[in-house]
Image (cartoon, rainbow, N blue to C red):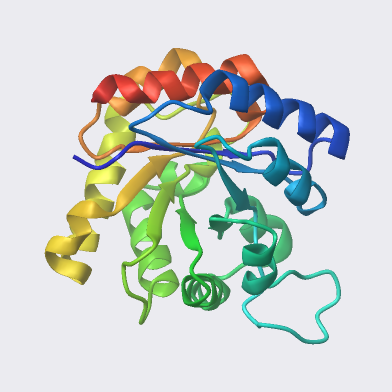
Length: 250
């Protein structure tokens, strides 16, 4: 049984004070829950604050992106080593917003993945299709292309995949459990061809308007191991309920 995993992507939200309050509230409500891994991914400005707020709890610290180089003249960027130094356990790579607004490609995802793993960070690699691609019947082809390019030459240690249909992110729409499972099952099979039996241990998260009222039905699917949560991760009660709902598959 793969251990459930829920990661909260706070995106570009919150002051340092607000981050401290949110992280502190989550630590109080779900910080000691066993049998699940929970990561909080605040903006870079709040990493140290959140790290301190969750100290002594089971919650993990994550980042929303990184640069593939160890150091250099890359204004505005943050390296894997810097994230480790800040206390991070994991990092999100290839989120659809990075692809859409900042030119993320399969090549850059691949370079970031290798840099993260080399530094000991768990990589949450995101894949997913747009509404046009889904309506055109190319969902599985898009996901396969993103997997093949993003994971080229990379091992499966410290690897988590997040399937996030772009049309469901921040829209209130959510893939049905059956739609999500279809893609998760495809990803699991693809990983099996790439990594063999080790693929059975790779966790695949669902992301896209995850809320307390749909997490239980999503988590009940055999290849959905948890969630990458956006807006609902910004409120203590809703994120805590999602974490508890993810445990119902055990």
